[in-house]
Image 1: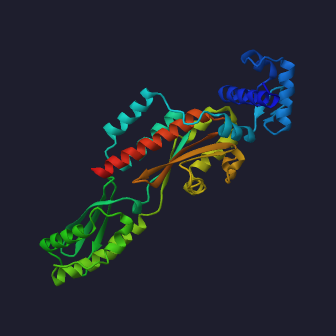
Image 2: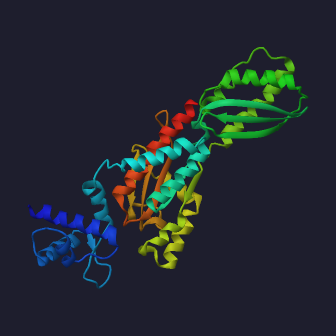
Image 3: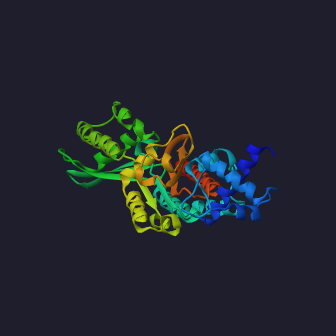
Length: 346
C-alpha cells in the first residue's frame, strides 16, 4: 500500500468512527479496530501528518483527534459510497404512505417533513412550490349575493386558493355560470405562469353585462396568482439538534433553534443552492450563514414535468451520517416528485 493511500485509509476510518461515537479518535483505538497492518506509533505519525494537512484537529488536550470541515468535504467527495440506496423494505414503506394517505399536495408536504426528520433525526426543511409552477385544474365563480362573488382556483396538484370579489355590477346566477364556463374553456389545464397572458385573449359569446363582470374578475385572478407566488419554507424537528453532544451547550443549541425558526434564514439556505445540481451538500464553514457554520446542510430538488418546483433537505451537525442522510433525502425527493406527478395526472 502506498504511503498516501494508507494515510487516507486512516483518515476515512477516523471520520467513520467519529461519526458513530462523537468521541475524539486516538491511534491505539484505530490499531485495535482496524487492520492497517502497522503499529500504533506509525498510525500516530500518520495522524500528525493529517493534522498538518488540515484534515484533523485536536479539540482539547486529549490525545484524540476529530475530523475538520476539510476532512468531511474530502469524505463526501471521495470516500463516501455514491448512489447508495436505502433498503427495499424502507423504500416500499415510505412509498405506501404516500400512496395511501397523501391525496393532495399540502398533505404530501407536511408528511414529507415528518418522515424526513424522523428518518434522519435531523431538522428537516422544505420549500412549497411557487403557485405559478403548478397547473390549473378548475376555476369556480361562486355566487354569494347580487354584487358579491367568490373565485376559487384548484390546481391539478390539489392546492386551492380563493378570494371574494365585490362587484360594481349586479349579477345573476345564470350569468355567473356563463362567465365561469367561458373562463374554464380558456384557461383549463394551463400552467398558472401563463394565466395572465391567456386572460388577455378575447372571450366570445358573452352578454354585455357578463363581459363587464369578466373584466372585473380578470385583474383579481391575476393578483391572486401573483400574490400567492412567494415560495414559503417550512421546518420540522428543530429540537432534534439537542440529541447531539456538539450542541449540549445551551447557548449554541438556542442559537441553532432560533435560526431554523426564522423563515428568512431558511429561504437564504435554499437560495444558496446550486441550481445546476439536483442534490447539494454544504459543510461547516462553507455555509454563508454564521448560524450554521458548525452544521452541514443537505438539500435536493423535487420536480414537476422535469422542472424544479421545490426543495427538501436537512440541517444537522457536521458529524453527520452523510451516506444514509444523502440516500434518505434523495429517495424522498424522488418519491415526492413521483407523487406530485400522480396528483397532476388525476
